[in-house]
Image (tube, rainbow, N blue to C red):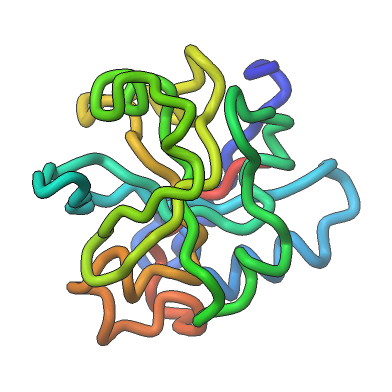
Amino acid sequence: DPGSLVSIYPRNRASGGFTSCSYPEFEYYRDHNRTLSGVLAYLRIPMTLRAGGQAERIHGELVSPNYFTVLDVKPALGRLFTAGEAKAPGSGAVVVLSHGFWERRFGADPGVLGRSVRLGDGSFTIIGVAPRGYQGIVLDWYGPPSAWVPVTMYRQAVPPLAEVDALGSWGMQSYPLVA
């Protein structure tokens, strides 16, 4: 129900414009919200996926653990992130593929579940496939995301971010919020 979604962009008092949020800001809004049924964060970012000896640059999204729950998205195949695996850095790395990417890259093979792929520097287990037609939240010139990864696994999935505290830095205002 896209009509029930809102974007949250805090006002930047210094510039007078609006900005995305840091992950700690997202956690604050999520935990102190008394009006909205849920708040999620995401970050669209290029990733390199390697499977079957072939590397491919894809559009991926690092997402808060509650991303699919807030949007009430159900998988076409497999499952989505569980709270435990998506919250703990260092837990088993998991990825959900878009339906279109699963069809194109993996020939719609249901046996893809449980298979490992490389994203950035990490090994990720494919746990699910998003429903046909689901293209993420934002339709932009980048094209729809091919994969969703819990943001807690950003260091493995996106090596250039490994030196950044993407979960604890109040200054990294890179996450759009949707509620």
